[in-house]
Image (tube, rainbow, N blue to C red; front, side, top):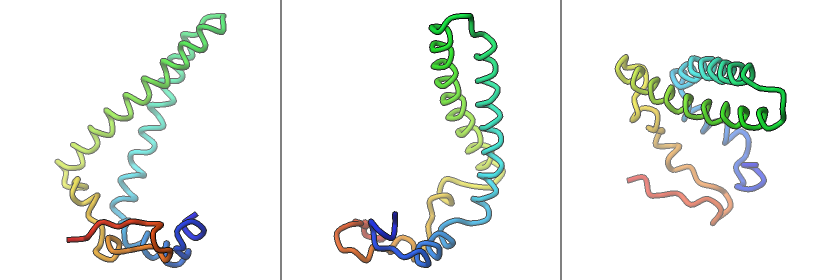
Length: 119
């Protein structure tokens, strides 16, 4: 999509991606993802075991499990942010601090990608 829509070649995209994502970011994602998956699975199983023998119950509890899962993921993500910040693993400023090269990266097609000034 970046090539066809924005005119960014694959090597240019990979170079910028490498500069924007650090090993620390990858490791934080690898820690959080299984925890989130476990929570979603447990909520789905818990609500699934409460289903009665009618279609209305299935629909109601499916919706409930989705809403509960979304809420818990948001709460857990906030908890991870606090934990990682206290431990000094990842701070909010570090997660959004892109290299200067990435901030000035613009599309080859004029007008397709609007960049804010990097001052």
